[in-house]
Image (cartoon, rainbow, N blue to C red):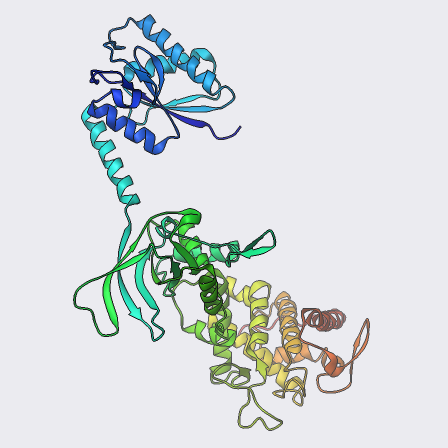
Length: 534
């Protein structure tokens, strides 16, 4: 069943003109005029219900009369109600109808009884002002009319006009993001008869949801300005006392939504969509606006705004550990791994100290390193830490509430054992040693999770570097980090043929894991160390 047709019924009034007139102009009382104004402003189909004539279209002319429902007997009012409902049913024979009655109980009761008797299953009757006195109705309707007028009035926002060397003017202002759809729209990119129209991409629903979740969090801050293009209907009114290079004033923006809106969103559609959906009363946003009469000018700015180089991921990862406020979900997931990576690369005593390439720890160059030691890409180690936090030994530590110090100590002990197991492959360029390569880092990290699982089953929940060295000794002879070949089940591969791709990482990790489990199962279980034992 489709949405019901809304039909407003406005009860007639005692005060009338003295001559024949259309129904919408015949009745002159204040309450009738207020009821009619509300009905016409909110409902697509509006009729007068007359005590004498029943259902009256607004433009139907009638003579003045002196008949009221109050002066009728009960059965006469019931007949009147049936007459009105039957007339409506003839006009809307195949529709569900929602009747909105702007009148008193004398009108609504016979109409409600007639609906029930007529068995109009999909018809409903609503009294928007039920129970309100005449004075209360007039106050409510006057406020509703005032709010509609305010909503139609142009938006006036304090703004700063900045003239650039080209003579083009920018307008800097702030506005509630939930209000923007009342004056700006998105020019969706599409083709009509082969001609390109618009320039904006569709909403990225996952991205919008992540921003919305952040906006609903405590302490949310969105400093990036939304960029809007306006047509000539938008004007700037200057205040006295303009400063050098900029003028204070008000930006006057007509309110019109949809395709005929005076504003178009050049940058920030995902943020605005998130504000639209967010469970907040309001969310003011900084905005930059400019006048652009053509879609071509708008598209030009859209390309320029969105072609700027994004922040390097490495810089984002290095900055994350210093943050404390809530972040979008995608970044929130990176925060703990980034904090661990920073500790491992910077802490005194960490086996990985200075070995991870970051924005502030440059990669070693050449065979000597040029004074730098970093050889492991931050993205490789970060991915390895994320894997372990998702379903490995770091996950177990986090679930047990062990804290970051314990996590750093666990990972540092593992890589110290790696360094002592393969000293000739340690801390060398990835082109010289696949141990420093992304594939080697990811595969060895997964092997750490396997080793910790076996050791925990034997009662060793806090393995040391020496424990890890004994575990790594099981696969020491099968690793070709710097020379030779890997003897994979699918065939041999040269040591430096291994690449940092998901498929290659999985191949190496599965190979080392399978050999480790096989050789581990063949060895007798070690005794659990006694508490306090060296």
